[in-house]
Length: 224
Image 1 (cartoon, one colour):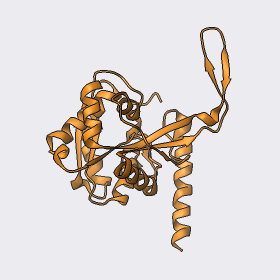
Image 2 (cartoon, rainbow, N blue to C red):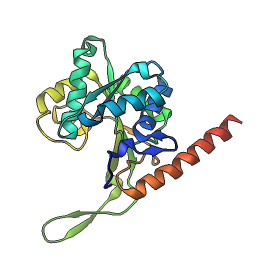
Image 3 (cartoon, rainbow, N blue to C red):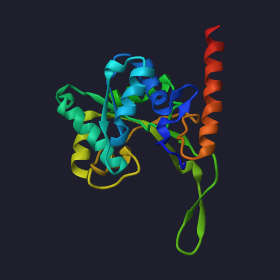
């Protein structure tokens, strides 16, 4: 997005995007433990924003990420392992993009329920547009009904995702479900939310601001 700061530090309606991404987890489970993985040079700013804007800052830890998404998640899982999480019966861990600030507590609960039942819960939504598969010479239309768009959160049995990362963290993966399946586990899909967009381009931020306002209006109308 050609910014002076990482996009999770942009302010979305009064709070940083990454804080907005944390809030639905804390609303769903007020006692949930959160680990925020940030670039080393932004640890201090991240901690300051957490203290200022998060509801339960005492339940949030901040650690440094790695050179890739996979290595950043590896750092997070390693931190949790050192906290003794792996020794607790069927502990669950959710991995979520800091640039997805519009998920709802309902989706958080759905993915956790799936992981508690099937050991994994992966947020996915149907593809709403035509897609084509390319090769060196041309492209081919393919049936979009056979494919999903993959989102986060992705929730796993901690012992299983820890085992998978131990075996594959030195490789690079687009998402954690793919790495999880690489180790022979089955990723269970959960119907996600089309509004759970990832802020990647400048226009995504404008859309996120608009969607956030609509969500707040809907919440207020339901409360009346």
